Image (cartoon, rainbow, N blue to C red; front, top):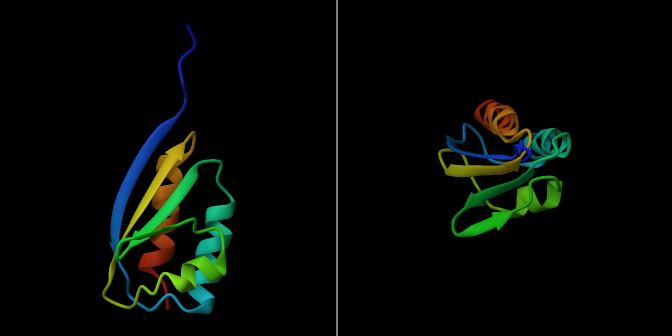
Length: 90
């Protein structure tokens, strides 16, 4: 029997800035570099953060709390990386 390398991870981040074009672009670029399926949740909406327009359309503003979920072989790493991008958004 083979062991699965799949994992799931989740964290919440309070944004330091609005998700305007620059931080949305950094987030989308970072998210695209992972194999895991990543989802960003805010205000009852769930998006795939690999698209800049989807991230900007989420409408999350400074002080908002967003949830990052990932499932796949690099889920833990993806969560940490995207949380860092969001925490440092400016």
